[in-house]
Length: 399
Image 1 (cartoon, helix red, strand yellow):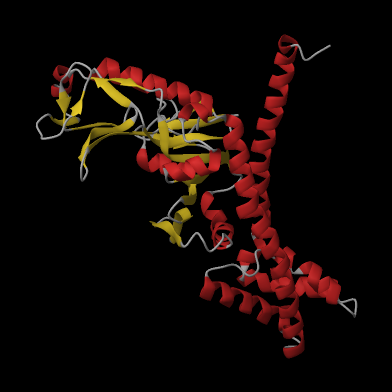
Image 2 (cartoon, rainbow, N blue to C red):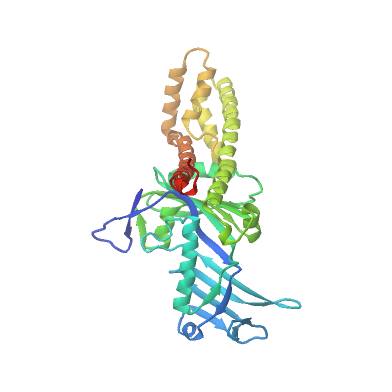
């Protein structure tokens, strides 16, 4: 597919430019370590305002030519991110360290397009070639590792991100209690006279889950204004130990597209789809009991009072009890003993004139998100099968 964008600094004659965009599971932000700087061009570093370094100290990070430095920091967000290196003093010894915080950058798309693992490895090599050309830094990369890794799935939506707020609150609420930290990033929408939640997140010490409005994030942090509504779902492995635990190794060269696609999809199914299906079943029973209670207590106005209680519960807990009116109808039909179903539905729809939230088909929005991630994963699997068929004659697999 293609995405249209424009430069937000242009106020007249706004023209959207089409750029290719692939909905896929991929990488963007990572922190890398384990590499060793073997050479520096100090004359180049001295000329750069975005570079800080110190060469004096009791302990130094030694280079191949016998020179050394105590610490070094390069901030270059336009091209890669931040590079930090230096030496730490321990109780009885010194420890050299290097740390590269890497974010994808594309002049045409910013960091909208996540990268496949193979593309990310190429981008990493390009980054170190850039470091050599611009800063005179040469590094040995054979043992470079991930100390933090974000894996994300980025895809388009059919509606504005803010219209998914209720379902995203529910999905994040359903995550296991081990994700003890949770929150939202909100901003005031003066035009819509409301609060817009741009980011939903939950995390623990080793893993983070984030769902956010990628379109809005790009408008706030870059020069791009997108024509499409874009959602990004991120799983962050916060430590080298967690990356090692998940993939069996945190070495960059050991990671593959198969590994990140399998991991992301399995986690999405486990944390979101299965948890929602469980909630759906339990909540259906709860709605069934609510209908019985209100029919017994309020013979004439039970529909209005039922919707009022659903709304009140959501206001108090911030978690939807009723995503959409369609969730009620099967229970109402099952309990209809006097063939008044059509009349009851008409009455409920009239009550929804002042509860229009229940007419927004939010239950369908959850299914849309599930279908999008599923389609991304299936497309990847099918592309791998086709690639296997293309190479099989060369590998001798065909008789």
